[in-house]
Length: 269
Image (cartoon, rainbow, N blue to C red):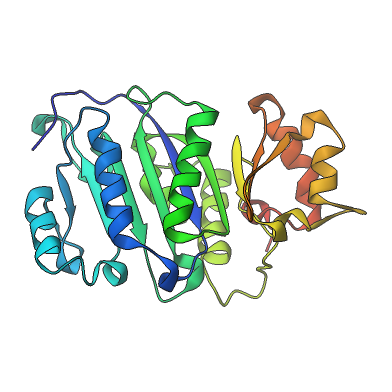
């Protein structure tokens, strides 16, 4: 069922990374995504079926219920709510709301993500923090971030380090995305260290391991708390922290952190 709502140009998104496939409560996550979409007055339209093919949500859900949701953990989850059919070209760019979980053989490639039209749910830090806490219970991620991105630039692909809708002239942005794909999402890459993060975002979800990373003579936690312009820390759950950075300070924070081999997006090869 397509929805009678015309999508805007900007998305909000939350991506959570680094969790063990064995810890995932896939059935509960599926139900959470369905309910999250429905609460906005929308109906889920499509989902991934066997072989990751796009099928109607109603058909896919019935098939999962028949098998008591077996196999969903291995094949992952993706559910989307689409606008009117005549407004859909490519489903993975033209959705209103989407929820997905990718479970790969590699721990580092495992990702849980939500993405939605900013018109439907405007950006609000408290709301996104609560979303992150809700998702944490289903997969126990060790890292994550929230961001805004134009739909034409494929926000659902961005979290996987895949370039979409970024012109070849935008070499810096393309390289930053590529860095995440080859280092942050590659379990065997020699340059990756567990304390590293992708980049600096308005909301960054960290583990205690990140907070212990060395930024000069200080830990990251000490460095953040040493200056209000470095943002603020909030403990959301025992092993899950939120580092909030004001938009006006993000670039200066990035510049301060770049020399410390901490930001994967800005690594030099």
